[in-house]
Length: 239
Image: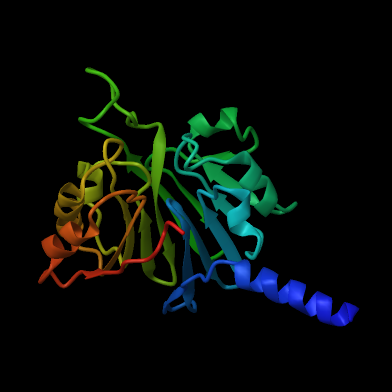
């Protein structure tokens, strides 16, 4: 009877875990597996290493492996969650973050806009992520230039771009040879799908995932990118 009770319990736990859709991309160093988690959080796996980007919400990581590397893009609560980081962290975990995040994660490795670091077979480059026109009051923006990071991760000759919180700034438009891009959109904090599509058309990634898109109409993005040869992949970031 006890064995049956345990079986029912474990089945219920397994059933309650969210079904996650993972995509795999071939590279010269082996496959990269990417798993959307929620909102701005995702996981990359390659070569036996796990990278968590902007982990938020302890409950989102009950069925996921701990991190070898954690990347943080910004200081806002939908990108930086010390409890989620603590859950994923082990003794050898490295954390890379913009300087502004040191107030919350004092032992993180600072990575400023334009700087690069190596992590195993990965190269991590921080790129600017900021607002030029949207903010809480005249003369102010939600994300100042230099405070937050987007990231370009290179592995096995493939480039993966994670935008962080940004508008379609010149630095995004100037990106080249991006294989996979995660591009934010939601008002008032970043940009609408129309602006995101315009920026995406400028740097022409092979595959783009809209993320950080709460309440945005993704059909607008799809229509704007139709016929460009850019594959738009929609995933459920809001369970």
